[in-house]
Length: 186
Picture: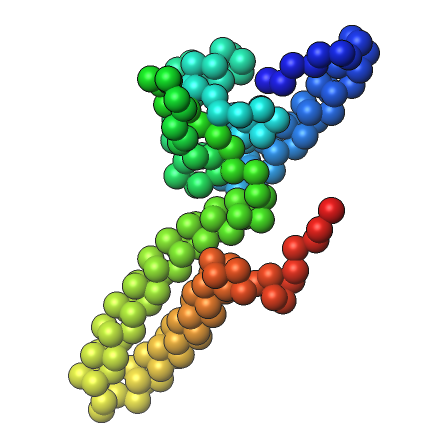
């Protein structure tokens, strides 16, 4: 963590308390999105770090086992919230936080939503194919056709949603979303 040169004990306490509040909030927020609170705390802790850190340094600072720390770091790397960086003279892996929260949001939700979208649209297309085949095989049964058409219509509606979601994800990933909703500047 950062050094507090030139500050008295009371000033350091205020800074540490305010940082802890933000780290707790990040942990709670990430927990809402399916990432463990400890991984959220890890990101929050790294956010206030001045420069890259090793697994050992973060493990000591947070009181986490090397296994838990490694799993947490891997999760954050996979979500593109931290990056492995090169450090001259260091034999250990170094990690640095991605400080752009807009990019963190884009990466996190794009990864999650695209995976979900692709899985669901695949299931919908497979089911639509099966229902259309069944419909063709039962053209003489109005009752069967009526039931199939209702399900086919519902599935086509869902496909349209996932196509929209794909365009939304594309807008996030390309940055076009900021044309509609600009980032606020400090």
